[in-house]
Amino acid sequence: MSQTDADRVLSALERYAETGQGDVKPLRGMNNVRRLRHGDYRVFFVVNRVEHRIEVASVRHRREAYR
Image 1: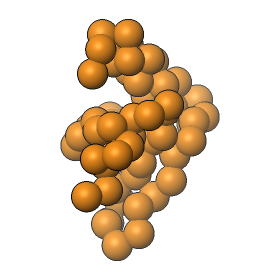
Image 2 (image 1 turned 30 degrees about the vertical axis):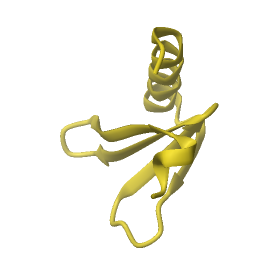
Image 3 (image 1 turned 135 degrees about the vertical axis):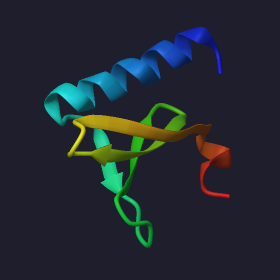
Image 4 (image 1 turned 60 degrees about the vertical axis):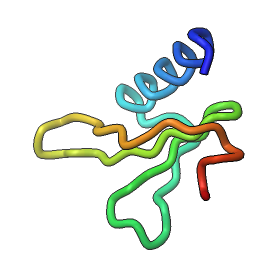
């Protein structure tokens, strides 16, 4: 992943954390795991509401994300 792509993905994740906006969906069959789609990348994460933080599990290119 290029630095530019990494910056854009991080910006999208920060925007979701602050406003709840973004292309985010819960993943079926995976308890509390969500997917943020941004361009060609997918961010898989869990929202920890008790500690008020987002725990990122992985960031993958879309062609590798669901394998």
